[in-house]
Length: 496
Image 1 (cartoon, rainbow, N blue to C red):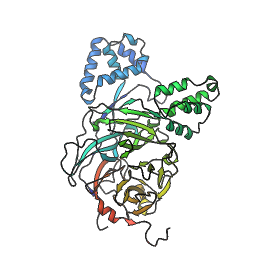
Image 2: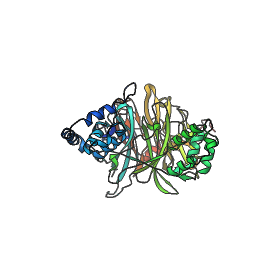
Image 3: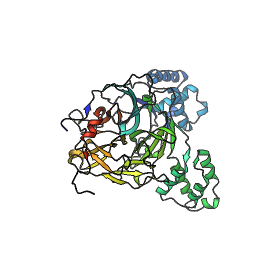
């Protein structure tokens, strides 16, 4: 290569402290010894006269109403969550109930600490564009107080040429409303197998459930279990594990009149309680049509788990766990389509090697085939993917990341055989994009990292996180990138 292939664009997304949501706040719960002070607070609020209650509520709406959508509904919801603490809940006036909700609420800035690790897919709406333009949805890892991550979005337009615009991200944020989902029996079975939970109770439940079922059917099946099974020493514990495993799948939905950048995918299960990290979005095509899919890392403060999501419109999302040995680490990235009838994904189960895993008949991701291990100086600590493979005429283009001295992250590239992705056919010598002086400083220094790009008009568009602090964009001529990739294994290397 005679010069850099990747050209950084001038536009950068930085964390915006004005992007806030409203969360439940219960005084005392953040103490070292959990002891809620809710009852005493509600009693003090109940002791205010109606005039003071009204004044405080009006003042709260004046200060915060314009920053949030349906703030009164949020206060009412938070009141319902704590009203059992009120000695005389029924005696509280509607105004007092809203004020109770206000005192049990607080703002949380979803990206106050950092904004990073983007992926990019074609937007569902391609109207009102000029020739050479493509509207894209950009997913973002948002990190707030306590290093708590959520998934946010931006909308951008690529082209013509290297022109890039990002839509204004201002406006009240909305956390999706959790909804019921049609559960899958095979996922429940895979989850129970992963926990080594196989007994007469689980076997009876799985035998009674249809392939797809709702919450009511699930609870009915549990309710119909024979008493002599439940009376066993493991009976009640198995019921708890069944409910916990089943609850790992859920759906969340946003109002139709919200813009994409206003939607926040917020942790909704215990496994996600400390964050939803590094979503790798891809637009897939299968027997059901075009679907947006992504993988992300769920973190509960101690352990990680790989989760998948699916959406047809980026408004309603279904979240499900990924099971099996191929999904037991960070960095799973789905292929955009089946290859030879196989559903494939990139993974890194040993923490340092890029592998290829296949989804088996029981919805379990199988033990991976190694694709690429650390070999060059810039990647000797570990390698992994930077998003889903991108289909080209020459093969599957895989953007990679490698970690070198001083834990410096850079981005590289591999090319996999189009029909046999187990085979690496080419590799870019050296890094495609590495931290420069503008990228190297931030929340986590010396890092450039991406969760996925796309090809538009002959250009690879690569959004990337810079030192876990901000998001930049680079473009790479696809033909030049493919031409710069060296045949792998190299001629006369001695490899079979």
